[in-house]
Length: 322
Image 1: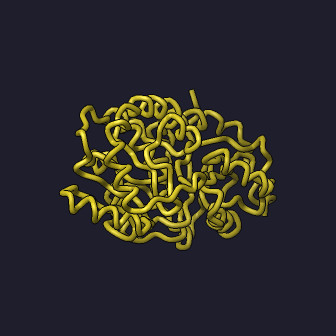
Image 2: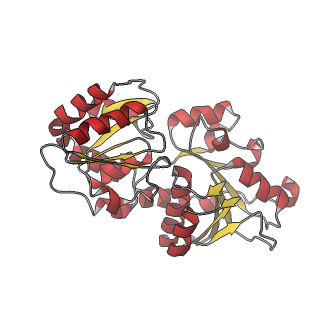
């Protein structure tokens, strides 16, 4: 049996419903289910996400206000500045360090400058892994931990779909203009289109919300959610995107499904035609996506594999590190 550990997950902010923040909360829950005790450490702790966290009962430590000694078996960091703050400014017992990089383009998610001092890294994708190696991270210390869907999503999968989408969700913090114009066109045909994200309605996008829709237009981790729930997904956002993912584009789009690599941009009229004309054909792929997602992107399965290696991570002597 795996030794249970007390784990601190670091995220720069717990404030909005963005990917890294949601990851921190889901990791807390999943680590708890594996028998570990997990808390979150952050530098910015504010509503609206703070309200959700309090309601759910997660333990969050505002590191800027914390004066006591922090004693954890392992620290799992998403962002280098908050890890550096913890290591240099706080009373911290010796601990194992894990750095998880969630993006190859956001400076906040780049590896810390003290790359040699961390013995275990997680990367969202192989593309991201290459960026980490360029930043000086030893390749043999990097383990792939892709975007995921929590296990319970798979048990909620849809069993019936309409012939044409009547309710569409756009889940994005940065929807481009052509998507907003597409939404107006769809509404004029009696189709309901809801925008969820930082610029529109802000909420925790979970299985229960997504199951209200016949189609979700999104990128990133919501894509895996849709695969797990057997909801047709249209991959498109401010980078453009693959549109309906098929067997061919699936291998090119995974594992982050961020849409950055394909560089396909469409007009609102092209989006409208593609989405409605090709919806029925896309339904045939749902079982394949579901099965592959369950095999490769289930949070608990992937986390269990990683957690089984925690014990072997060398403990960092904080005094010597400083």
